[in-house]
Length: 458
Image (cartoon, rainbow, N blue to C red; front, side, top):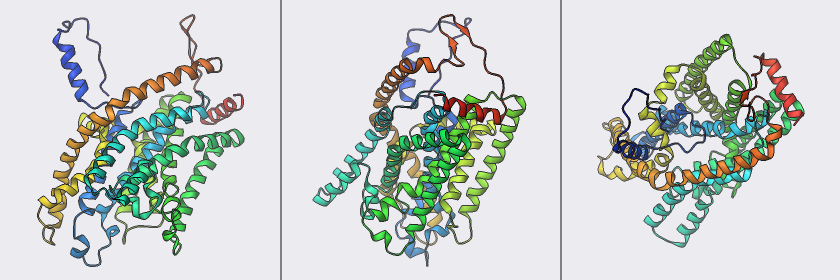
């Protein structure tokens, strides 16, 4: 999102043409649909989608199993470009849980589930449904195809292996994402009950542990002989296409969100604490990257509990981005990275289709040109995907941002007016315009105690 800087007093006043030029540029530049955008995280979205494009440049190469004897994709590090999906899931868990984290800490009223669902539908629905309609109309309109499309309309393509990747290789991840949206208000409610019962650290620890346990169970059940052939259960409840399988990854993002709200809105850190947090961010960033590389290059591929390792690795990258080196945040918040990140949703929806479309235009893969062809597919497919995605963003994403903003502002005003008597701590007295003194700096134990007390007195 572009920031506007006031014109200094000594500068010349704007000419009549300047506002229109600035307005045109602002219209051409992708904007963030977030209420409170964190620019560096837009850059992380760019990293995630570029990883996935690299993966599909390799994985959708025709004839690879025949070219590589005994081919098993997990033996090749490039296959881990697919884990950009896990980075997206970590970011979703982090960003979407922030309002619920503030509610759990007693810093705002409980978010409206109805408004949350409406905003999410306006965010992910139009671009997804537009791409779905185009792809369905581009194929044969048989009764089976229409039934397949109907399942996709409701983000249920992961109900069976036959529909999981039938129309677009990435649609199953959108089903998992939207199913997480459906579950999130319930997850937040359960977490709040646990916090009230056991305290913040213990309550959130139990909640995240439960999410991890569900994922481990879904992973272990996926290896039970014959379970993958069971209708619905084999893909919707267990295995890599299911929400339970990926729940731990969302949970790691939620954990980062709880910590972020704690240290940015609940604790007033002194200089020494800020320095310690910066050093922790540096260490966590390095540790996360090392863990991801170790997982990708593990001998034989696919180590035990791979998904949990990937989630922890990307959680470390997220934590390090938020609190670690400033140069990393500046790089991720640069205009090129933000541009890709801001249109990354449409890039994600369309890149696989684009890569498949350019396949016939390139030479057939052989042992000699395999690496070169993967690079070529990426270098050609990525820019073309960005071009298609930019059009998709302007036509199917941007027009709905104002509706989301109005929905958020209307809900915020209603909730604020209803809850105003309970939320007067640490705000400016509107009647006297005199700011109330901020609370003194607190140690970690005092902060946790204060948060629990706030919850118990609500």
